[in-house]
Image (cartoon, rainbow, N blue to C red; front, side, top):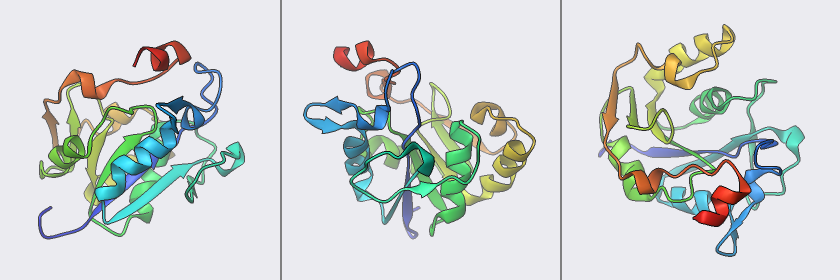
Length: 176
């Protein structure tokens, strides 16, 4: 990665039914989760936010519609990789406000098709070489990102679990 650029892909999420309102707009320390995540990706040469235009989220940055009816992270990853100007992309879901640029750089430096933490496929670093497998899985309705990357060159990087907190409910956000 040292001699090429890096694209940051923010998955802004959708209706967030378990959360009760769009997570992207939820506030933590005076900022929305979307603003926190967008700032986390500021070190990247390019940033792309991906979501559903029909959700009508009022975000402080442009968002690329993922172009599908599917509500699964794989749809956002595929759309982001297709739009990315760089070979290596770090993908950050909006509901992981403790992930740092250093975590994402560690993943991006791994050199594999896919590099993920021990907890799963997101956050992660995805090379464009992973795109055909992800596109095929999406087209076949196989929506598990974890299963879709199983046959690829994948490295698991140990990351501090405290940085990988995923916010699925308003109570979880309050506990952070």
